[in-house]
Structures are given as structure tokens and as C-alpha cells.
Image (spheres, rainbow, N blue to C red):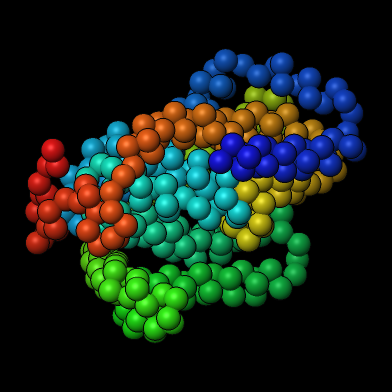
Length: 346
């Protein structure tokens, strides 16, 4: 894990280094002009993002009948951010979230279902967020006058929407797929446990997807808030350093870069964002955006390298129990209804 964290930092520095090759060494000195109020307000925005992430997990856990404490939900979200930051394309947040939720009383299958369902919530957010971001850039004159941007945006949005629908509502084939996979001799010994996990996982995801439209709207509001508040941090820092960047086009650009970073194989997409953001926001003089970018990444990205291990270390140390994913050692009593409250574990 420390090696992965170092790798993520190295890729980020490489991205910044490429931009700084074409800049004046004095550009970084602008960081000295950053006010304490800007740091404080940026920290508040980051805290709001963490809170929204925790509220999203708490709502999903409540749908399954668990009363997850808000501090525990926020802790699980932050550890998930740390895990995502050190895995390729930022794809590794689910195992860390599931582990923390299991330590806080959810059954292992339910914990994994909630952790993976946060990805489905983000997938739906990407589906409607991409066309909104492209429309924002078009109306502000920041998008090149080519129809291919609209065609590409519609295609990407449709792809995200289709993936969300298939994963949220068409998982019924998963148990059969697990059975066929475990038909191979080397995996046959795991067939029973894998089938039980796949069946319970499918049923749990179906329960999460069966939430009301108002609950789905709240989940989308939490997802939009947790991401946009982090993007807004950059605008606050950039404005304090004297950069005149319009708010909505800046947020739209950051959002699109964030979406694309999920297919970049570097840890947490690091390096890609550091390189592309200055080039897209200030193509005439990209190095001028580097001081704001550096402070923003230190607060929003590299801070979880300290927060994640410190908040989740105790839970990781306590990890123990049998290998059966369907009967975890700290499982709560399975609730019969969404409003049922599971028993407290000793």
C-alpha cells in the first residue's frame, strides 16, 4: 500500500513537471499569496464532500434495514477514497468501503452490495452529468464548434445509462454465471459459497434498486454534491490566486476530466488530471494554473493518504473471521423489512 501511494504521488508530480517545463520558475511562488480564509473555506468544502459521501452510504444501509452511524459512514467513505487513490483508474474503493461497513455491523454480502452500489449511483450521475457539462461548455463558448462533441457526449451518456440499467435491474443472470464459472475443477470447491454470495448479492442489489424515485433523487443529489464541492475548491483557490476562471465552465471541465480519468490506468488517475487541467483551462499559459492546481490536489486528493490510514487502520487491524462471504463473523441479523433494525453485535 505505501508503494502504491508513492506511485500515485510520482505520477502526479510527473504531470505537474511536464507543465512546469514550459513555465517560469516564479509561477509557483504565487502560492505564498494564498489567504487563510481560502484554506479554511476549501477545507469546509472538502468536509461537506465527505459528509455527503457518508450520508449516501447511510441512506443505502438504511434501505437494507441497518442503522449506520454517520461518523462510521463518513469514515468508510474516506477510506474508500484512499483505496481508490492507490488503485488503477481509481477503481478500488469498494473493497475498503465493504470492509469498514462489515466492521460496523453489516453482513459481508450487504456491505459489498452497498459499496458496489455507490458505483452505480455515480454511473447514473455520469450519465446525466456528461451532457449537462457539454451543454454548459457550449453555451459559454468554451467548446469547439463541432457536431462530434454532441454526438460523442450523447453516445457516452447512453453507454453510462445502459450500464447502469443492466447492473441495477438485470443482474438475475449472475447466480447462473457463478455456477458455470465454478464448474471448472479448480474452482469447484468454492461453488456453494460463490453461488450463495451471488444469489444474496443479486437480491440485495434488487432491493437497493427498488427504492422510490425520491430516494434515487436524494442519492443523485448526494453524489453531485460530493463531487461538485471538491471541484468548487479549485475555483475558490484559483480566484484567490488571481485567476479569472468562470465558475460553471470550470466545474464542467473538471467534471469531464474526472470522468475520463476513470479509464486512465495510473493510480487514482493521477498525472492525467495534473497534465490536462491546466492545458484545458488556460491553454495560452497553462503554467499559471499550476499553483492553484497544486494546492487543490494537496487538499482534495493527497489529504486522504493521511486520513484514510489513520481512520481505517484500527478496523483493518481487527479484520478476522471465516472465508465464507455469506456468513461473516460480524454479520448483523438479516432484517426482514427495510425498516427493521438489526441486532447489535457484542
